[in-house]
Length: 89
Image (cartoon, rainbow, N blue to C red; front, side):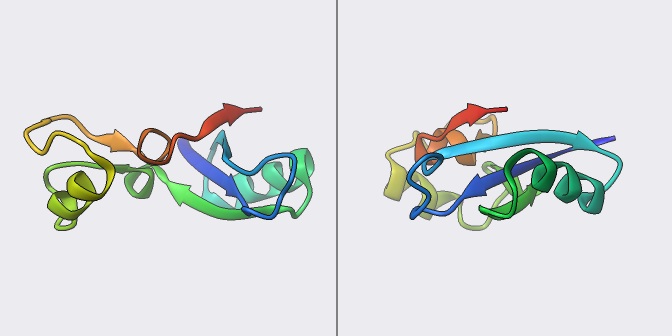
């Protein structure tokens, strides 16, 4: 089982700025569950590797400057933390 993270379109007046975490066997099952819960109004599906970034990411210095994150931070940061997203079910 793996965790998958789904975000919503900015034009979604109810869920913009929010995300959903779904644990499933694969991305296809996670997408099916997301459609069951929220229909097709979501925007992106991220794997756990895509959802978190950290010092090993080649874009880390840019991400830190852009989002005011301490570049000496040694643990990964999530998309939710970077963009201020709220988790929903």
